[in-house]
Amino acid sequence: MEKIRLKLKAYDHRVLDRSVVSIVEAVKRTGAEIRGPIPLPTKKRRYTVLKSPHINKDSREQFEIRVHTRVIDIVSATPETVDSLTKLDMAPEVDVEVRSMGK
Image 1 (cartoon, rainbow, N blue to C red):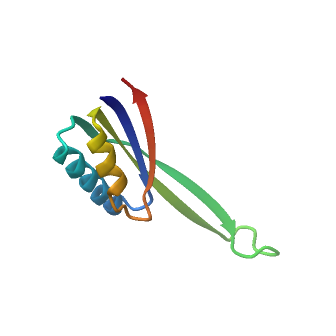
Image 2 (tube, helix red, strand yellow; image 1 turned 120 degrees about the horizontal axis):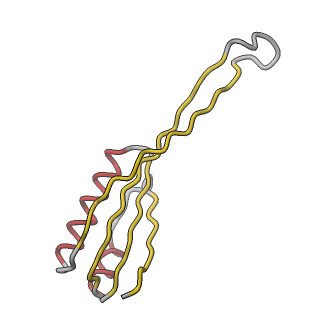
């Protein structure tokens, strides 16, 4: 039995939420205890770009990228839980960071 922390990041919150639901279902099927998903604050990255590089310095465009994040803690992970997580088919847009927290 060990603790596992999953940190999921995506640009689209709907894809992220679908992935979280599939992870939670897979973990609950193995009988492990789960905490989360915990939504973390959305990070906004803003960019300002000149429309024309040579003239019209006042004419600019602004872009924004939002990164949505969720954290899931698996408190009592078993080897079956780890196997079910590795066999899951995740969306390619979702970045999953797995960290073992010890016992």
